[in-house]
Amino acid sequence: MPPATPLAKTASDQVAQLRKLLGLRPRALAPVRSFDRSLAGDELAPGLRYIEQWAPFERLPGRLDLTALNLATFDQDRIDTHRILAFDTETTGLAGGTGTRAFMIGAADWRDGGLRIRQLLMTTMGAEHAMLQQFARWLEPDTVLLSYNGKCYDRPLLTTRYTLARLADPVLGRDHIDLLHPVRRRYRGAWENCRLATVERQLLGVVREDDLPGAEAPAAWLSYLRGGSAAKLRKVGDHNAQDLRSLAGLLVHFHRLSQFDASDAPTMHPSPG
Image (cartoon, rainbow, N blue to C red; front, side, top):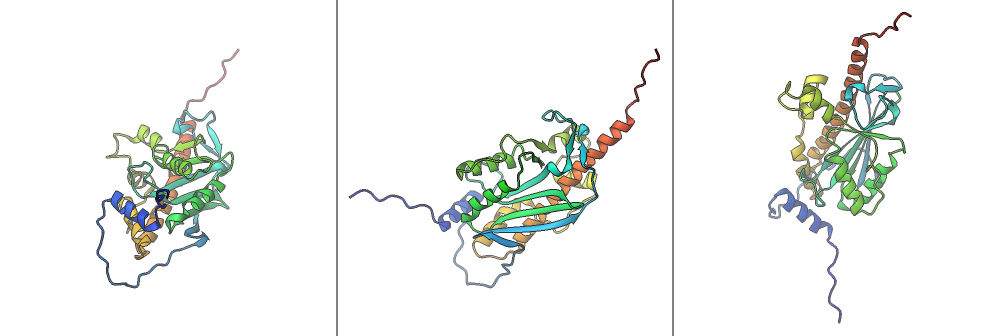
């Protein structure tokens, strides 16, 4: 008789593995309580929610001037505004590796005179494949990604998840503007650090109130998967949406710097002759 084949991990096994990665101890069974489980948006597929909102935003020109970014990866100083897609992930940890997954992907682009914010949220482990497929549909052939530290973290993480899911990777090799690097070049030494929260305060006048720190996002998601309240998970969504608004605002800040630098440059006159 052939030896028994190990069964694929169940959802409970995967949750137990995530708890171990997050350093959370198993809890004794507690009496069943009634929780607020409501989440915004619509269900696109089993366990995958889609949330969309529109944020007022100043009307931008059709092309943004990026000369102040000093981007070595672009052979042009201007880019069509509609091609830019800001993105940000909320994940099960910051260590990376195959054990870390994105449970939320947020994206924002300029549409109809404002900022369109779209979010994909997994509410079950089995929804990852559908989430990755849906995000890929948001990327056009000429889409340029916009992120903050996304080249080192978010993009490689998504590449790993697409590889493990045996799906074509839509993010690898794509044009990508990572605003962390121009911020460091221009403001390192002037501020205590170059974290996004510092950038928001110093350049955009944004001070987050009642914000859930990113470090608490994994536990908020895991708690919801175990049947807990959705209150903190909704705050994760709010945090992600603010990250996207700040990315858009920061890119506009550099666009204005480019305009200022151009107007401040000396005018060259042809020699008489």
